[in-house]
Image 1 (tube, rainbow, N blue to C red):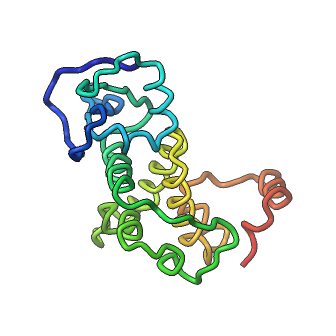
Image 2 (spheres, helix red, strand yellow):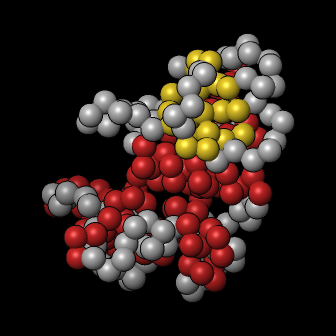
Length: 202
């Protein structure tokens, strides 16, 4: 999972930190091609998954380059995650309350502009194109899964809050469509109403 790598075909996000260079390599796409992103060890260390991998690495040379393979996460999604990790090194995301939602809008809850923009439709590649109307929630879900897998708590908090505001005023069908969930059977709906009644509150 962790290897020493001397290749140069990478996308660099690294600053001038003296820590070891970390390269995160995505899972291969349908053509067998992976994307590799370079960042500092400090930036990479907000991921519990990466820290666990580095703990297994006995390379102590501060000039070493260490590659960590990231399964399950596509190149495009990993690129967004690395963007977050790199910025977080310079400006930490302030603590976000999850539930209840204190602000009436997402922008009131998240006061740092960079982080608001990071999960905006524009940042996720949505520019009013009909073909891209479903891309924002899909990419948010991909970021959610990636943050959860990599153990990046603050990214997970940010994405969960964004999703919560996106579905806050939707009815159950709107939530189902937004989250791209299959229709529930009557029995499944009754169970969800019992376990999570807040989903059905208007």
